[in-house]
Length: 108
Image (cartoon, rainbow, N blue to C red; front, side, top):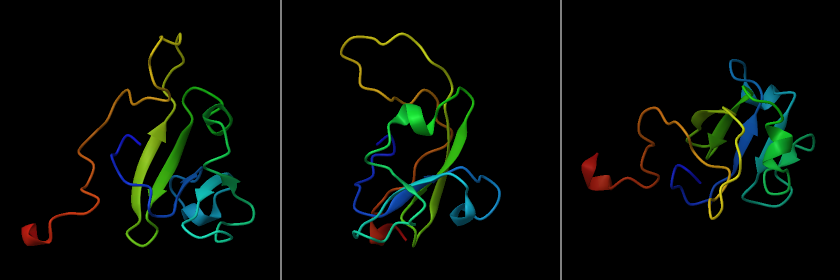
């Protein structure tokens, strides 16, 4: 994961960027507990990236940890030739710094 978070919380990708993400017509979720995902949601683990991001320019909201609701806008920016020994998908551009998943409580 490009944010260097441990995947120990539920998370998901949602097509609604400006409305309540839970009402998105397209969603892919990873639940911490089996059976907690929205029945209409696809699976983060079993949906190919090419299915969720089928066209250049598509954006989705990534919500990590529904309690804290850390939200990130993810955009499919371009297709290119695959390079040997390169892991995909990969981060091309990032704005700002990702928050610390488990900040040092002494810093607060």
